[in-house]
Image (tube, rainbow, N blue to C red; front, top):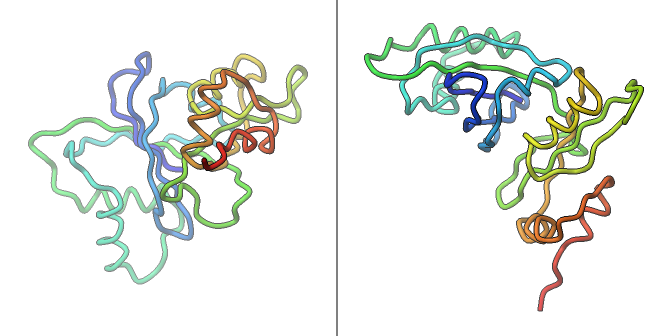
Length: 191
C-alpha cells in the first residue's frame, strides 16, 4: 500500500490517501483520517521521502504518463517515485507531502479497493505476548491504535472489503467482530 500524507505535523488527524499498488500499477485509492505516526506501527513500513508538490497532484495520472514512456518496469516503488518526482516541474505553489509504503494482507490475490465496496481493517501479531489480533474495524486509525496499545509495533495489517450496507449495519450495531464471518453477518436482508 502506498500512502500520501500531507505534512501538517504528525500530531494532527489528517486525510491520508491510500493507493493499492499491484503489478506495477495503482489500481484504486481511498482516503482515511489518520494520525500519520501510527503508520509506523505496521511491519514493513517505509518512508519514501517528503516532496513539495502541487496540491492537485494526481499520482495515478503521473504514473500512467511515466509508465507509457518507460521500457522496463521499476525495481521498487521508491525508485518509481524518485523517477516520477524528478521529471516534475517545481511548482510555485503547493504543499509538502510525505510518501510511505507498507504491506497489507488480503484474502484476494489481485487488486483490492473495488468500486462499491468499503475496506475494513484488522491487525495481527502472532508473536505478541499479549493479544495476537484485534477486531475488524471500519476505521483504520482505530485498528492501528488498538494494535499499538495491545501488540506494540511490527503489526501485520489485514484488509477485507464489504458492501456499504454491511458496513453501515455494523457501525449501527456498536458491536465488535473478531472473525470476518461475524462481520459479514451484518448484511441487511433486502426488503
